[in-house]
Length: 304
Ligand code: PPE
Image (cartoon, rainbow, N blue to C red; front, side, top):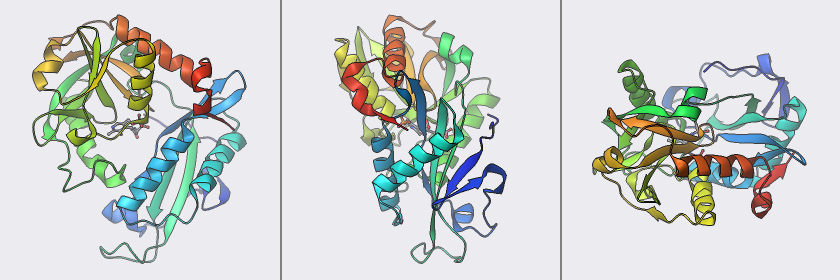
């Protein structure tokens, strides 16, 4: 998806012009892929622009860094403020936010410990991640021939830059085969997640989503949806799902900061159909909460 430039990017404490936000070609992370990042969104709310679940995203960023032995040279609160500041100075009422922690220039070789650690925050307007048609009518998915990471090779709890090669391979395979998105299985053969989203199914009025042990990222949106479903009186179960579960479910959808709540229309050409009532209810509840229309969760919104 093309990026629409904004004005300023926060780099190590300084706001630099968009076109000047550059790194050296010998930046360590560019070679070995050990960086960590987040995807966050800011939305217009009745009280002004607010970042949704900022603290949880920044906390996960620090957890990812800890897993990778990367020492972020700021506190969590300082990174939160850098994000609020970047949203503020760019003056966008709504945007996608990309905090990135990377190992910088000055060292080569596999030991990351002596590397300088750099932090950047960029924001830009970003629409429907899987397309407007996907949001309205659902996406066509394919179970990938690529397996999600073995947790003892790549820690699924870390949102690491290089880990996304696995997602990219699955995404390209799905697109070249004529689908919109891939669903990945864990090494044990259970449903894990999509390339950049968690997955949910609806069966007999209950919502089910795979656990972290399936190799899925612990999604902030997944957690949000579990709370919203409980509020709507929909039973929720976090449990291992078999491939046949997604073939025969009543409804399915995927969730992520970028994708928000996107319905799934088919899996491996088994038709689920147009988004069902529970998917629609969750989509609406999610839109309400991120836009500050649900008083119960106002504490999830950080005004900039
Ligand atoms: N699984 C994966 C693999 C993943 O990348 C994401 C977010 C999620 C689940 C959902 O997590 P959460 O955003 O906390 O609900 N993917 C981010 C990056 C997408 C990209 O293309 O880059 C995102 O949604 O921002």
